[in-house]
Image (cartoon, rainbow, N blue to C red; front, top):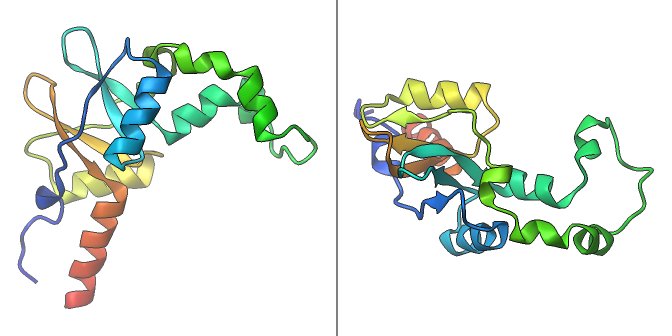
Length: 154
């Protein structure tokens, strides 16, 4: 084993969303980028949070689903929900942004990444410069793959 950081080479440059972007624009950006979540910046260009798959599902489905232990008794189809919540596509991303700060600085360690993935339900970790501007992201999938490959090589 080489002793090099697993996470350092995994940094991906991705589009950074604005809180004023619509959910529709954000979902298209997610699909185009091929990642599960993207960082959102405030009006000053500093990291404000994350918008991703979980936030989109939350925007589409009614809020009470988060409180239920099971939704098997609800028989509405996805098309019914999309029809009822179609307007959410034109809502600003800021309304649905996950704002818990689960980010790292440019000098992050592998242990720091692992701790965040273990203790928070995030699929990406934004890497920020000293001005809290997004340099890129590290995806949980990429981190897992690099960690698994390193563990299996020795």
